[in-house]
Amino acid sequence: VPEIKDLVQKQNEELFESEFMPHLDALYNFAYHLTQQEEDANDLVQDTFLKAYRFIESYERGTNAKAWLFKILKNSFINEYRRKTNQPAKTDFEDYVAYQDSEEAAHIGDLDLRDDLFKSMIGDEITRALVSLPVDFRTILLLCDVEGFSYEEIAKIIDIPIGTVRSRLHRARNLMKEKLRDYAQKMGYKENR
Amino acid sequence: MKNTETPRHDCGATLQKVMLILDNELPAEEEKALLDEINHCSCCLEKYQIEKAFKEYLCAKIKRHHCTAALANQIRSSLQTNMDR
Image (cartoon, rainbow over all chains, first blue to last red; front, side, top):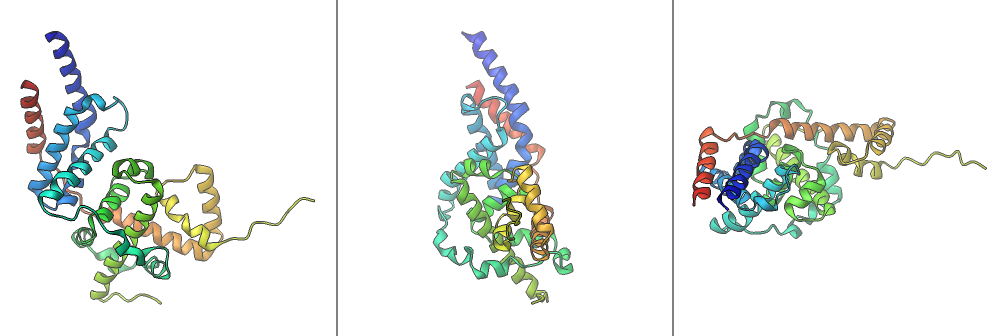
């Protein structure tokens, strides 16, 4: 019946505007950090919103729209964008065993970001360090420290157990500290040890 | 006889939970108890403050990229095209 079809379409449009569009900026920021290209970020975000509309019936009004959209974007990135750009589909975490709860990790954990040299670093330098991380580590830092998602939400977005969220975050932060320390040392920073 | 002995403080165990506080992952009561413990140990307090500074540093320094009004319009317009099909 055309009237019912129009009514459903109108309701969906309202839901789209009220629950999905407010997250556009956050999704774009996430997409940009993943792809590193404005054009690719635009495509990825547009694709995410079109998919969200296509699957709008599976979204429950008033639930966590932001996490739902981030999950769609993350999946699109993995399934399509990475394949297109021939990026590795998965990080081999075994390569990073050195960053598990070892003495080295404890040492990196002592890096004191309150030092004036770190304070003087600008956003571009921090962003460069972030970009140099393997994408799975970059993703988890963005979701937790930039977007403020809970471990449970991150687990759902990335499809990994909460325990893995914790360990991956731990390793991502240690890798980030190491990058920042290397950079700071080049700038003359000396650790007090 | 009532056991009045307080549990021994374990820096390692306490520090493993520091990020849970900073990531808001602990129930309020547990967070308060852990913060009390951290405040009574200078070693844990120092590490806690370092981790806190790191998290705040990342939040503040990672550059945010903003989408353009053109993208928002483009999304609305592609949606309209999709719906009209």
